[in-house]
Image 1 (cartoon, rainbow, N blue to C red):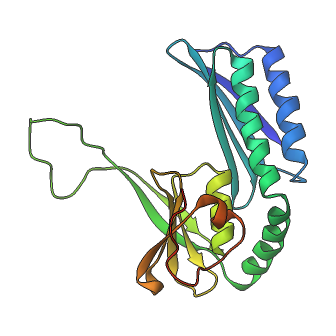
Image 2 (tube, rainbow, N blue to C red):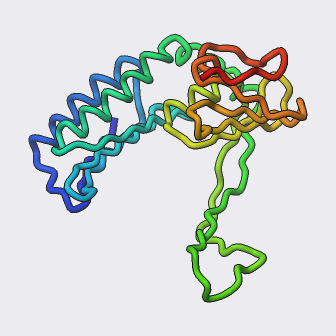
Length: 217
């Protein structure tokens, strides 16, 4: 696994770099035979140290985690611990997902969609906001065919705010997203409803609810 360790206004010495490499390799190698690459970035937030970890484990699986602490070492250890916890949660599903992914690749390629980064307007009284927003960056992103439970796994492992995917059950485009109440929202246009699922329920493997599900708090 190619590993990049860098610091933003933080001096990353050889001892810290070796600690990162040893700890991260031990965690990731338990679940992936040949992870592609990883990047760990240390930075400062006021008087705190922040550690951001990103691991490209294999096609379609990106692991992300971060943490803050008073020192760089515990910041990394906490972020790595969070990643390890998520991986343990999906241990068996990662194996099944890999087998299904190989089958999907043979049957149906991912949709390649255009994605854009739009300029975020600040509160200002200088001028009226234009009808068409300013495009800051343009790129492409794959939209894979997944079961809902697989999409939830990717959302959780990647620590993502939202994920669009093609639902394996009906072939339609679906969206899952993190709600402000901590649950996961699931939008399936084929049902003409937005189905809100508790995070634990979604991760347990249910691929489609029989009806609207209540949010358990």
